[in-house]
Figure: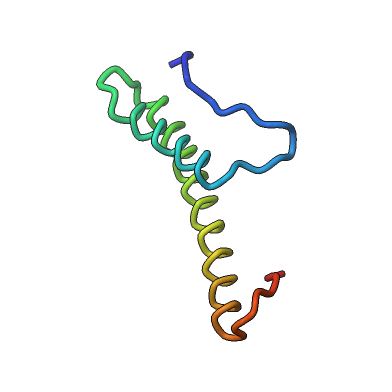
Length: 79
C-alpha cells in the first residue's frame, strides 16, 4: 500500500490530538481493506497501537489539568 495518506508536520513538532485521531482512522480504514497482506496489516496494527498510545497520553494530560483546575478553582499549568 504505497498510497498512504500521511499528515505532514515539521521535524520534532507533535501532532495535535485531532491529527492523531485522523491518522488512527486512516489505519483502521487500511486494515479493513480486503487486499491488505498480513505483513502490511501487522505494520498498520503497530502504527495504530503507537497512535492510540499517543492519544491516551494526550487525554491523560488534559484530565490531570482539569482535575488540577477543579481542586483549586483557578487555572494552573500542569507540569
